[in-house]
Amino acid sequence: MWNSFITRAVIFVVKILQDRSYCDAFHRASLMARRDMFLKQLRQWEIVIIERLDVEKDTVAKNTTQTFHVGQKVVYILLNCCLDPMETEYDKYDNVFAEIMEMMHSVEGTSGPSTRIETVLDIYVLPVLNFVSQKCRNKAIRLDSLNLFEKMTSTMGGWETRASLLARRHLMAIEEDGRDENGVIPAGCRYIWTDISWDKDQSYLDVYFHEAGYRTLCNKVIEDKVYLEEREEFVSR
View 1: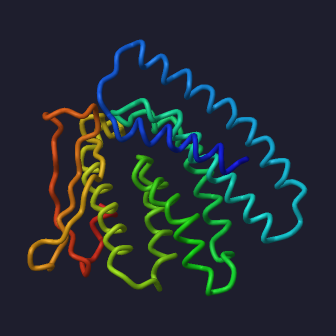
View 2: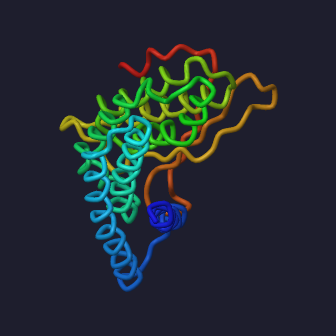
């Protein structure tokens, strides 16, 4: 039942995020009504999950239930923010992002036998850290998610994981450059990582970030280069 619900909720969110086109008041009201229905059901699921966590004694089952709780919080944020193409709504949920990261640290090192670690990371943990690092604009929480991602994947091979990490570090650096005197990253300085590809000599990766907002021909696009061997001191500036 949980898997069925969470799948339907995520499909609803993904369709909205992929569209990003302007919708009239009637269509928006319809989307908000469906969103509110999902949120109501999600709150009921959280009660069930917390009750299960309180009584669960088996370590594996408890970790699995904790994973459900993390997923519940991620979907809670997405449902509340998916109708805002400017991405400023995410700033209201720093406390939930912080709770998610606390849970991520609590499951660190509890993935089970080494033969299962990469599967567990790929399915449950890394997508959550990926989400936090792109949508949370609280610098400390965002950096924590990137550093934990790097720590958890440090022994994994393949260029894809490292490229993903560096692309998101670049995204953070670009947005930090736009942070104003009030400590806020304004709407016009928020970006969405949209594409990544090798250059013709495969010496670096071209990464593309589109300005957040309704999808128009006027959205600013930033093209950046990512070298897999590059050092990462720029993220602390």
